Length: 183
Image (cartoon, rainbow, N blue to C red; front, side, top):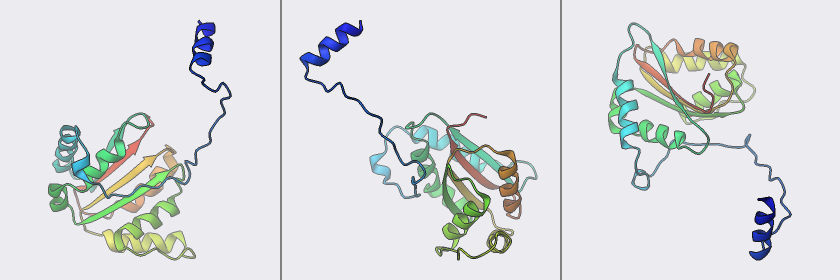
């Protein structure tokens, strides 16, 4: 079988010298902007998630919705469609989009949340405590919608610390997480 493949490669003048291409995953960054007219076939999935966002979750201030799938499936596009949905914009008061990738450090995520909320990049010299106070001031008693896109790390400790920063919002606040991890 491999001889046939090799023969076909020769006939097609394909290069047999194959190398590994490194991609810079750490530098990946996403934003919330989407051109909806270029997206087809996701309306049903979007509506399912919007319906989940409408539902109250008891007396909890905040709840999570996960979009899970293999790379390239369109998780980020789906999250963008939901984030920019007109009905979603009426449900929530504050909106944040954070691309996490493989750099899930609580301080970095909190800084990105503040930048998304305010449009201003927080000073790098600020301590985690100061950043947390600023986030708390912006979210207290507000129903917020947060997208954590491309989350790779499932460290319970980090999630717990991040969650502590989010409990000050109003009842019905939602966090959508896109991830490849199924745990």
